[in-house]
Length: 198
Image (cartoon, rainbow, N blue to C red; front, side, top):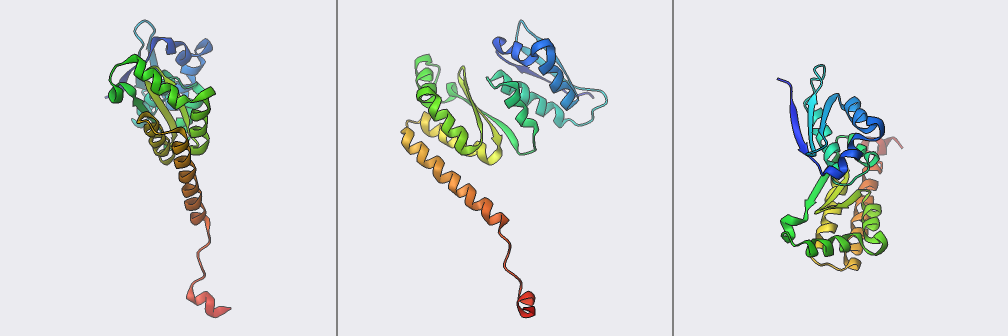
């Protein structure tokens, strides 16, 4: 049975998904061995496996790329999801946390973006992720660990933490990650046999 899945994206993102002369849609199809059919009126996107592609994970990965473009990411950033197994997309739906009050959603989006986009930039730079604030969602692209840290920072802002508190949290997390990365690369001490040889 040939696998397929539906994704719904906002109508104003359909043009970005298709791209100039259909180039973005074509690139996704080519990279992942899938076929994408777009209903521009409804915002429905049908993704199906090419007959010669027997890797069902291609559908899931194509769905993530389409979803991320639908949630405001540029195609270039969305294609980051194809760079490795660890890369993932996290979508935080503010309606699930704050209810459907447009003014409350707008206020919280403003806190996450920060003055002149500074807060969002800080989170991106300190976690190595990409963040899109679009409609009623805040979405994050990065590797699994980076995404978890960025999500934690965003949730702190949603729950009312001060920008300074969140920045300190991010700097601490970054130091931890750097320390862990260094520990991975440090040569292990010589074994007892080697000691006796010197």
